[in-house]
Image (cartoon, rainbow, N blue to C red; front, side):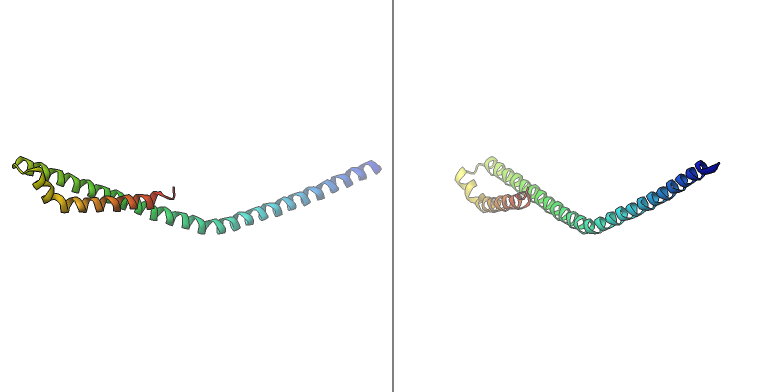
Length: 125
């Protein structure tokens, strides 16, 4: 075996030490990456909660706008039905307008309110 055998053993030992150092360095890098991921998760979680909260709030606002729109549509349909009934009974257009004017004012106010709500909810988008 002689000097060549000792040299080969020395090289093998050196390689084994380098491999062990590489494994140790890789483990340290992996631990650092995992720690970085945990740190990032800790920073992202509050943002995620805030986004989910905002999404829930916006979803609630959208639901409210839809409910207002349905209510306005129902009120409008009722007023049209009342108008048809008055016309069938032989009322003149002046009488119909006079009798339904308070309801029309309420409808106009509800329409403006709905328009403002829609602009508030969807204005940011």
